Amino acid sequence: MATIKLWFGRQNFHLLKSFLLLKIIAVVFAVLLFCEFLIYYLVIFRCNWPEVKIRAYDGKRETLEPVLKAMFLADTHLLGEVRGHWLDKLRREWQMERAFQTALWLLQPEVVFILGDIFDEGKWSSSQAWAEDVERFHKMFRHPRHVQLKVVAGNHDIGFHYQMSTYRIKRFEEVFNRERLFSWKGINFVMVNSVALEGDGCNICSEAEAELIKISHKLNCSREQAHRSSRCGDGQLLPASAPILLQHFPLYRRSDANCSGEDAAPPEERGIPFKERYDALSREASQKLLWWLRPRLVLSGHTHSACEVLHGTGIPEVSVPSFSWRNRNNPSFIMGSMTPTEHALAKCYLPFEDTVLITYCGAAGFLVVLMFIHFGLLASPFLFGWQLLRKFKTM
Image (tube, rainbow, N blue to C red; front, side):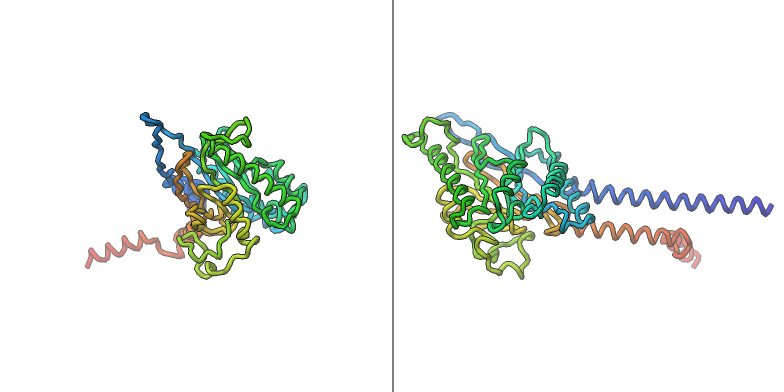
C-alpha cells in the first residue's frame, strides 16, 4: 500500500512539474511573439500616408497628378567586426529588419531612400569585412522588385573628407547606385555625396561639384521648356519639377537650438554649436547647393535626431532621425506623398526599446512569482482571495 502511495505521489509530482514547464513555455513563447514580431505590426499599423493635393488644371480639363509613396530613413549604422559586439548586432539589427519588413508589408512604399551611414565601419573595414556587412544589409533590407531602394553615402560609409578615397567611393558605388539624379512620376530627386563637398579643390570634391553643375544645367533646361535655350541641346528633358534634395550631412545651421519634438536632440545638446564640414555642411557648400539646384525640399540625416528648418526663401529641410535603437530609444522614418508640384510628409515611429525591455522584465517577474506559487513559497492571489472571501462570509 505504501508503495502504491509513493508511486502516485511521484506521478503527481511529475504531472505538476510538467504543468509548470508548459506554463513557462507558453509565457515565454507569448512574450517573444509579442516583443519580436507583433509589436512592430501594432505600432506601424497606426501610421498612414499623408494626404497631398493632387489636383492640377490643364486648361479647362481637370487632371490628376500621380502620387509617389516614398519612405526616407537614415543612419542604420550596421555594426562591423571591430566595434560590433555580437549581442548588440543581433538585437539592433533584428529590430531594424523586423521594422523595415513590417513597414514594407503594411505601407507598400514605391521607393525607399536611405540617407547615409548605412554601415558603421565602412570607412576602415577590410574587403572581407565589407563583403560580410553588405551581405547582412541585403538580408535585412530585402525588398520586392517593384520597390526601388536608393542609397546616398555617409561619412561612416566612405569616411570623412580626410579619410575618403576613390577606392572607398568606388566600393560603395559598386554595391549601391551611383546615380545622382533619379526621376519617377514626374518628380526629380538629386542624391548628393555631401562628404565630397569640402570645397578645398581636391580631385574627388572637384568631380562632385562638376557633376552637380551638370545636374543643375539639366534642371534649368527642364524648367525652361517653353522657351528652350540652344545650350540645352536636343537631349531628353527632365520633368519640369523643382527637385527634392537628398544627402547625408544637413545644410548649414548653427545648432539644433530651434528644433523641437519628442525625437529632437536632448535639451542639453540642442544649444551646442555645429562644426562646419563635420556636423553640417559649410555655409558656402550649402549656398551652392541651394543656388545650383533650387530644391523645393531637402532631407538629410547624420545628426540622429529630428529637426525642421527653413533655408533661404523658405526652402524646408527635414533631418531624419536614426532608424536604429543603437542611436535612439525612439527611432522613426519619414513617409512622403509626392507629386511633381506638391509634397506632404508624416513621421512613423518604431516601437520604443524601453517598451520591449519593460515587457521582458515584467514577464520575467511574472515567471518568478509563478514558480514561487507552484512550489508553495508564495500563496496564490486567487487562493488568498478565496480564503479571505470565505472568512468574510462566516463573520
